Image 1 (cartoon, rainbow, N blue to C red):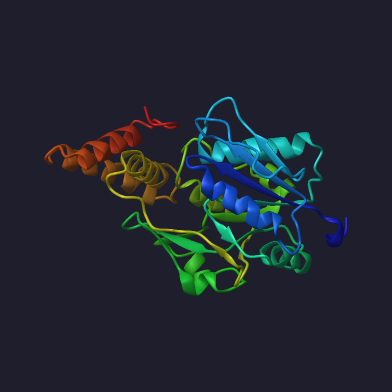
Image 2 (cartoon, rainbow, N blue to C red):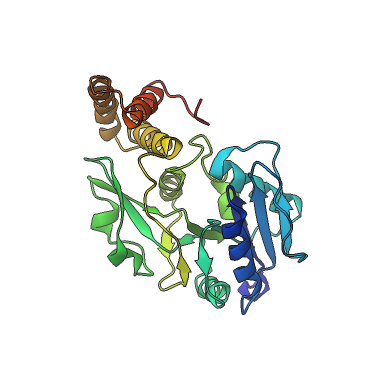
Length: 288
């Protein structure tokens, strides 16, 4: 299939207030080049109204909220069930993102000039294997090429594509079995990027793509967000980071748990205790 005949599909997962999702879909429907299909996976407590009445928009509602990656995978399964061509491009987009009228057109132009199998995003991040923290590197994200080999293969860092925007042929997502869904939320993009590299699928950056997303970390008072950030980061480091780092982090996570057990029991400390305890015990999925 030649690149010009490919179709382009958006998958976004809705949860919480309807306004961000409504705004994003309206922006997509006012694109200079309309996507062929917009899939809204509805995880809200109440069914999301069809604000748009457009045949390009499909609102699908899973039986349960399986987390962000679970919602994405449900959307990918829906596309597959619609007999979508495996060479079509799928764009995963956070529902609180904002796009410009030419965003879709620029994504199409990029894939037409970069037909080789890859995963393309808008921002590269790194995991510091010493501290366990993640950061976004704006300098590397400004490049359309893979990060320098010294950085990608560093003994102290891992690169990943930020999960707010990921695009790839449907077949690439299927080859990787979708996004890892056992984390429920957060750190799926890190593990997904690692699996892609292990399978020889390069990570690319679409430079200058007009997509904005608020990357501000959640408030420490938001207990669930804090829980998933701590637990999933700890689980990734002790289970998926390169050896010998994973062995070191198994010990460090135990020490972190002991340390927080000795701290005064504030709400955030109690959340961190639970997160580290569940990580050490390999408890995944939705927070109990």
